[in-house]
Length: 492
Image (cartoon, rainbow, N blue to C red; front, side, top):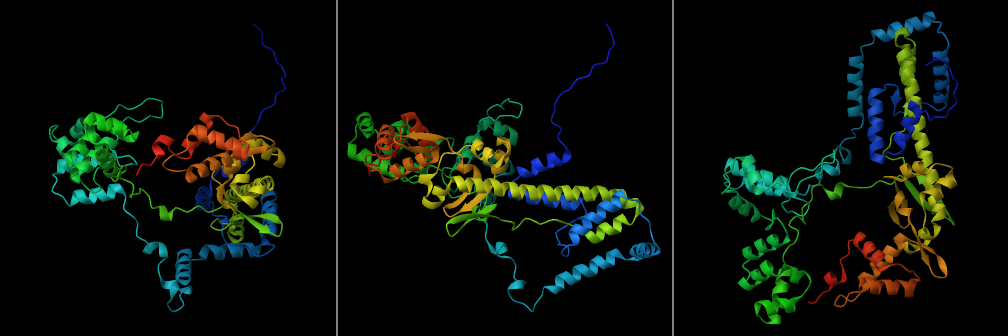
């Protein structure tokens, strides 16, 4: 063993706080950026939304740097100013200013006095609220109400009772629950649990809290007074109903085929999703504000940033001078000033980066802007990264949760990145264009004789020169939320 010194040269990436902040701001969505700006303004008094006089910001920054870097020589005038500042009753000043602002906008009545239109909109009820209201109007006991609340809390987006376990963050899974488990937690007798659940299932909408499609349809059929053979078809031949195998049902139940057809028509009138007309959130208030606009000017497309709703930050010059004039607050003011400058530069860099990426996408997807989705070109992150001179990870952050408004509609920036699919004697086509072609074929098909996946493969090859496998068509169809041909077939 020996003790010695050695010299080693190595390269490493050092993430400064400024770089970390810039990367974090870059991947934020528009709403998240607004929240981040508000938090920074709450913690940094030197940040302001009010724009300083023209030319003041440059002089202010220069003066601030000189003040921090050089020693301050206080004059008699500055001492008098400091003394007068300390004698100001700031609480009285702020109170008078708030009163002036509240009374300054009043102009003798009119639209300015009316509340915002959002306050006059009614919010649609969620399924939980609708069921809770019915429970409160009923004569359930406190224990039964507790059990009902547990049932309602375990409804999924379809309105079914889902007691399956959930995955934990550590990779484990919680155990599946039963009705008896809910009854024990609520203090309800186990024999009463099925009866209370049945009462809940007969609330509006009927069939809610069912444990599957079959039980949901049975609850509705019994409530609506369906015939016994129709209820039996639901109980015994649910799979044959899904496959439209009516001949098998007629043979097994020894009833005419026409009677099975009539029963199938009645079953189709039942609701398979009790929560269809209820929403957990008001969809009318969900709006997407684009980060950039694409406007056509003559033969060229221009990308414009959308700064509405995003505060343009500035340095509060008057407050900065007051703080720098105080030796005790000078160090605090210097730190807050640097943080404010870093934040303003990071937001501006984020805006410029989004515009550069959007301009690159517009340049490569000009045919899409002119003719629509069918002319969307295949493009990957590397294509844009090489053009703008950035890393692919940066492009990924820029295009996440960022939206662009084009003449063809509103799209997320990630929408334009598609894998390529080869065509015979033509340029490659984007996978999104193939999906839209499949969707149009299915929408235009004869519903009594729908196209199979293999038929779609043949049509794509003949009409568009696109050669893909049948399993690829099935994958794209499932991504579009389209059923298989056997389930799209309509007999009535």
